[in-house]
Amino acid sequence: MRLTKQGHSSVRLEQEGRTLVIDPGAFSEQDAALGADAILVTHEHPDHFDEGRLRAALDANPAAEVWTLRSVAEQMSAAFPGRVHTVGEGDTFSAAGFDIEVHGQLHAVIHPDIPRITNVGYVVDGALFHPGDALTVPDRPVQTLLLPVHAPWNKVGEIIDYVRAVRPARAIDVHDGLLTDIARPVYDRMLGPDGPGVAQAQHGRLAVGESVTL
Image (cartoon, rainbow, N blue to C red; front, side, top):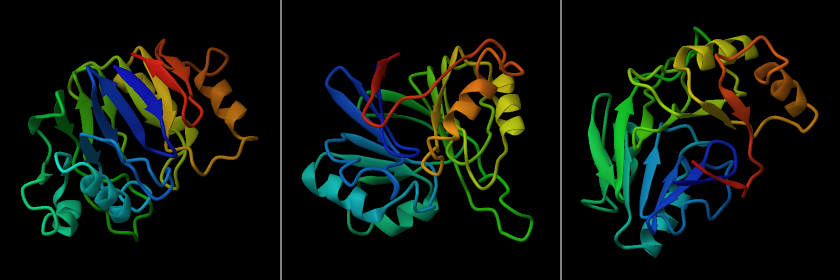
């Protein structure tokens, strides 16, 4: 499986000629979803779900399909009947040849006065987990954790404990669109071997457009 980092929380996964894109939102590239055979969306916040990007991808590829939670599906399904699928925690399905498991139910708490929305994470091929905007610990081991390092709802101590709880072989940064370059070495140090420790997980980050083979 080849993983390419896209802007903010979006990634592109490629395997055996098929392409899966997760969370092509407004902070990712305008063409982030184009060329996808399947698209997964974790929740409705605009930095994860941009209707225009999804529509462009579905128009460009009449065989492309979307899997997401109800709040997003309701905004897309009328325009693309039969191609937008509603999923929730515990569901399993195949998307563009990738085996997907759904984990999680709710977005992380931003503030007690802000109502929580639904959020799901996706385990791909039993090996990679994208949690969306939550610190969901999947009830199965994963080799690669896509780690939401910076958001209005988290702090670095919670991120360290999250990696310890999931215990992946590697953690790769996502949800980093609001980080300036001056902040990145701080996160690299805290999550790297000179930090408090993240259960032996190898921490890394990819520049936008950079790829790694998992």
